[in-house]
Amino acid sequence: MLTELDALQKRLEALRPLIGRLRETTGAASVTFGVLHHGQVVFQGADGWRDAANALPADVNTAYMIGSTMKAMMASCCGMLVEEGKLSWNDRLAQHVPFRSVSDPTYGASGKNLVDPADLFHVVANLPVAADFRSNWSYCNYMYIVVARIIEKVSGYPSWASFLAERLLKPLGMSRSRLWRDQLSDDNIAEPHFAKDDRTPGSLPRPDLSADTLMGPAGCLWSTVPDMLKWIEAVLRSLEPPGTGDATRGILKDMNTITAHHSQLTHRGLFENTYGYGWARLSMPSRLYGFFSTNGADEDAVPGRCSARRLMLYHGGQVTGYLTTLCIFPETESAIICLSNSQALGDASDWVARAIMQELFQLSPPLDLINLAELKAHETLAAYSNLMQEYRLHQDSEGSLENLDDKFGVYKNEGLKLQLTVRPTSQSGKLGEFLINDMTTQLHYLEYFAKDTFGFPPKSREEQESRCMVDYTHYQQLLLTFTRNGDGEVNGLEWLMQPGLAPICFVRF
Image 1 (cartoon, rainbow, N blue to C red):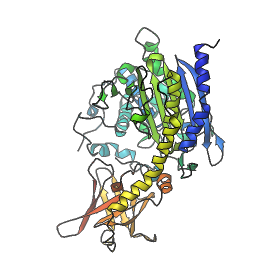
Image 2: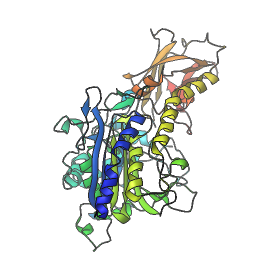
Image 3: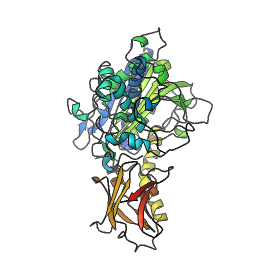
Image 4: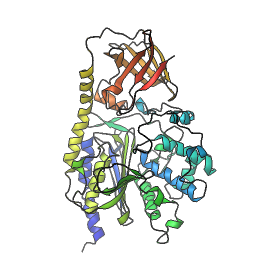
């Protein structure tokens, strides 16, 4: 007779064909996955290619960038320092680092960093404010970079990276987890991909992300399914009430504070949807599940809509060419980790996590995940044409004789340490070009859009994807609008880099 564990493993093993179909539907190169239940590893596997161009298969030991799922590790580093009395959760930033707010773009085309790490505090102090103080929850990578500087200041270690490696990765036995790609000891590494129009994987440039770069503390870690399961096991142990297990002797400290509900994700609904320090807390079933994924939170795709409630600690990760989904269910000591190496037509890591979740807890009603993934793939394929339709709809075709002759020059935003160089171009059919921070990877060609406004739309969906311009989701992000003084001379320009915020202003030099 099958035991409960045998029956569960049989159900999970039966998912492998579905996992393969979900990956193929999204056009992802590969996905790897692991499952814990009642504290035991019950399922692991891989599907697809770590390097599609060379037909190299992925396996569970393939290393992927885990993106923002690393944020919880940074929070745990702070927990250790709080336990040692070197930090307090109530400390003001200015107690440890030179920071004062004066009032988001640091990651450009081809996955390149635009800002030097030395300019961190200057840039953070000049970031535009998204909402009134404590009026809303807002996601911000920059603050984890500030946290990294605080760790360096108070820990006694030479860097935040050495603290994380020596105090967390090494003690947990995460032997294939590294903060630099070149520190991995072999070539079993997932290359970054995007999904081409025919749903086959295309190659992307490797992300400019490591412990040395500005955004490193927000998500530069390479890891594997077995290593991530070790991390999850440590999190689960640390959540045990003091005295009931080895939580008091464990590596991780003050996890009850780190995973507590500090901010409301939404002010709607009866049940919990909150955020801690690097962890979201969702009372499942939740309409917010998926909000960390490129699949998004979809009311038609809520897992287990009619099933019993359970607490989930949740986060996603996204780095150019990589997507991660991490779900922990403390009450049953269960967890799901899924890693993918594609900027695809939907998030394969999220679809696979949903499939596993359904079988793990036998959720009701079951979702038709292939249909949902297909709908998302069609939506993603159509996104570029919809973007360009909106762009062309607002473009002024009457004034196409206007040129850039009086607009060539250098424009700077000193607060954000950004420089745009607008110059003539030899590109046929274009009126000019501009560089961001003199980086050749950040070259865009300009065409007339409207009076004093010029656009730089990608030529195709595949160009948008292969140049890592997936965050350009609104046509106004593709526009530079030049400003004039009282004498009619061009004295600056404005660029709406993030919808919902005011345009970034640049002064002509």
